[in-house]
Length: 478
Figure 1: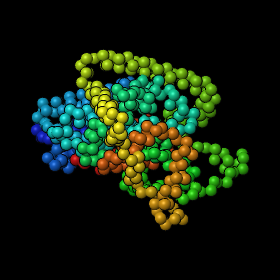
Figure 2: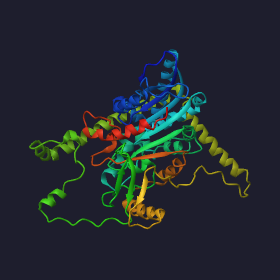
Figure 3: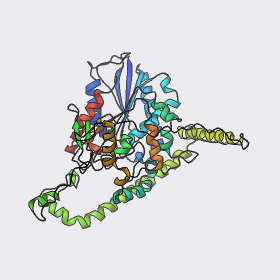
């Protein structure tokens, strides 16, 4: 368990407990910068205290690290919840009382955070502890979407097989509830306690990469129907950064019509060679070598690629197999009979039985339709202002609709959100007070790690996300 009591606190005091949860294949070191930034902002002796003189206490979850992340959002959530309760008991032994609670999850950790608050809500935790901040960063809230690319198609096929229970839940092919509904659908349902738990938080804010996140694309991280940024260069998007928190977006301009394509340079000319170079690095920093080693790498590519792929697939297959064995043991454990997965299953059966009884009691007459749990699928606008281009119509709503339609053209762009995912977008966007912060990190190979400065020692580009962490810390309520 990785926890810190910050500042020069008295022996007995109230605590605002902040839980940080890492992502897939992660460990607490991935959140080192996040922990440092929030501690410097709110954990010093002179830092602002809570309404009841609460002092910050940071708990970085450890029990679900590395290969443990294969075991599913649900089992990961159960582990983290137990770790949280253990930390609270330790604090109570020291004479400290947890009176306020916040949680921030990165990537998969955001889904685990949503599961954890469901557990806490079901156990009555919030009867005595005030829920304050709920934040996620680059989290696949509606699962992983499918783009019309070979890599995306392969990932959709292999993901559920190679990532064990978590992979099945990422791609919504699991049958988690007794009715066969995927876990992410149950967690987004406004009639279920996961959603209801989120409504108790005073401050709900999510951060999403708009571009270059090959792990968790924009629509699922930002809970949006369409990927309006998928062709941001061709569509001529203009982004204005928040001056204080770059790369957080203050506003972006959607042209009413895409700019004309640039003239193609003469073949084999200097401009032609320059145009062939991608704006994003083709290889991660660890594989970017100088001459002559870069030439050697290219020459060895036909040998290295199949070898590396074989090693990766073997590693994933073995980890997935071990995970499925662990899950079998967990499900056999009789002490887990009252875990949330069983409680929710019972609720699902009760609802289904109630609907059946309603129709049976109608004796063939027109029975009243059961109340739908599905609100409107209209998405809330993201926080950054979307500005029409100067030459667009005066009616800004019309301009935005036209611009977003051309730039985002969901079906033309080929992004596939299935019917269930679109329903989840509609449900989650009804969360009261939901705030969205969009992040534009370009050009990088993958902005997923950069958004939280995950590994600044090995990857200098990860420092680009420092403004995101400062924005998160400055807007975090004590």
